Image (cartoon, rainbow, N blue to C red):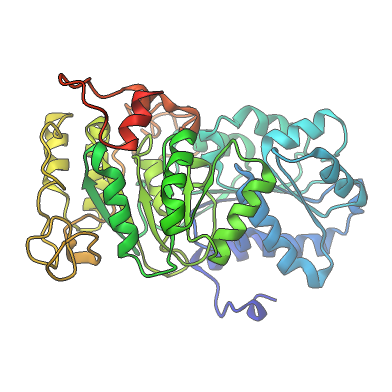
Length: 476
């Protein structure tokens, strides 16, 4: 089954978790996204189904909880693809779509239910699903679910599931909140670690470029980067707000072929946009953080952070859309004065890969803020390939949009906000203690536009804004 799908060998997370899961033990698996964790729990789940053989019309045997509908539908696709030969049925439950078809699927019977916590709770309250047969529970991207405020819903769902079950938790990070829920919901779990458990790390396959760019230069610099990519390359651009997302898409569509995805889009609209992006018909996807976690599209060449996210944890997960499954990728991030509180954490991420950090970022960290009071046109030179270039051009001339690892930008590393390993539920583990971002707060940027309410100070001459970006900030 797996060989026929083109996989010659298991990934590290699969190789470590399969034997443990086959023994029926609970598992906490800590691994970055793009590591093959979905099959890490689905394949043992299929084996579990073959042993149990429940009547699917009485309720599912396997329940997978996922933070977003995008990730949920991708898990369902994998379950259908690999479970087809065993006639395993799978239903996906998520918000933003009519309940009717999902309820009809449940009535027909489903061995596996993949669900977002909110929609599953709605259907539980309607008494249209029974979880009394569930004996294999998966919490995928548990850290993200807690981050989005789903912990009460998760605990409510688990109360409906028999205590005699196997539980598998997958998480990219290991903060205190995740440790606590693991201690409460899992029994003597085996811990599988891929990478450094104590630190937030970025994928080493991604070349990271941090660019200190004035707001009025963002649009022009963005277009330079897009033109520097190979024709047809898939690129994701992340914005802070839904409004900025739509505006940027309108500005880019004619020249580059762009589409937007965010929380205000209906499910059919989101599906259509993702299908267009996957097929390459629309190579540029402009997104809020709704698409940052779990989105698995092959061959994404670059990620561009038009706006820096709420913190380095979201930064790492955003750029993780590229450089997946052994491929390489690039991430370009525009960093401004308003982002200076993240400078120290970002430096640790970059230094972990032994790549250069822009001097202005170090200055911001040293001063505890500031550092962008005076701009050159594109920021200071960074030693690119094309002499005189501010951003590593490929050979004289404009010197913009340079690519390659010698352009003087950073790599990846660790997040200072995460402490020692500790044990399950440890209260002194030092996790989740980041000063600027309280753990458990909803960091969905599309719902948090406050940063863009900080309009730039009015010019003494009363001159109009010099870019659509400033206009957006002025008229919020």
